[in-house]
Length: 115
Image 1: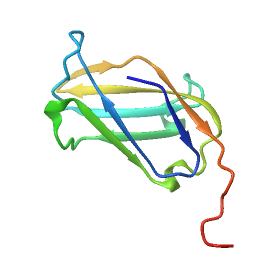
Image 2: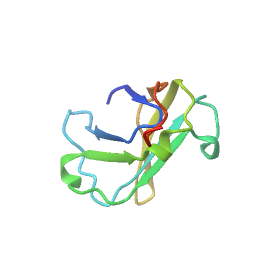
Image 3: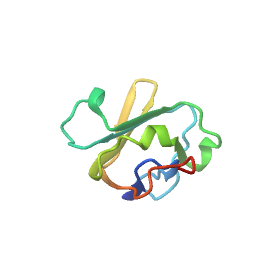
Image 4: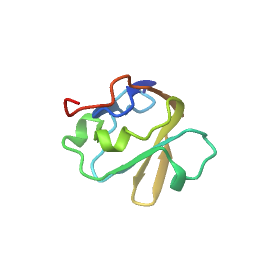
């Protein structure tokens, strides 16, 4: 897993490859993945900057989770450093990944309609 940098107000796709302790991709069949980004790591999930729940993984056996966010999802993000992690849930077992950072860069151009 890695740290990411995005630009506020852009459409983004993030692919995260999840591996076990043997560096083998985790088969994500029947998993629910919770992605959460917070400006302050101690904020509640309700106050998260960005979040997504993934239940439909296209090729779960390759261990990759794809997160897709629209410009509407990212337009109000506060520029600066945010913190993110994933929780993987299968049956009643929950596993959290290590915390990483997501840097939100301010955008210069905000107009998109030719004004």
